[in-house]
Length: 211
Image (cartoon, rainbow, N blue to C red):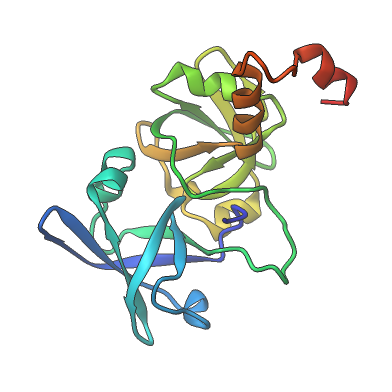
């Protein structure tokens, strides 16, 4: 489980492929402090398992199932990535509940500059994902917890404030670039319950409960 608050921007030091498994070695500093083999690390929003580390980097493996749902197999050496360790029970919870299970690879369709932020428009390939979003709700983009400022029929807008641009890789994204998106986990559970014919949960009941 993650929060979508990026702790560090790392750098891809090495990429290799062995028996259809992509091995990534990622250079970093901060998140190595309490690292162990088997730890879960969010790499651009995808939950990966640490298989090795030293004083300057750690290694993870991208298996076929993860490769098919992400663009991790398209990363290049020296490319930067967003990193976050699994959330600690002792820390503050600054973002939202993020599983690190990427729903799909979406595309950036527009970037606009505003007075104090950068407006980025993102279009998912699967239109059903739009139905799992609400305006002013939470969305994870390349592992970053963000707010959906404008929800449209087939795409949505996010605003990148100066701090987000400084501390993540999102400021370097361009029109046409891919991004990992994960919709809000809580919405998925509610959607699943409402799909059940015997749940007794309706839109009217949710409104009565303040949703």
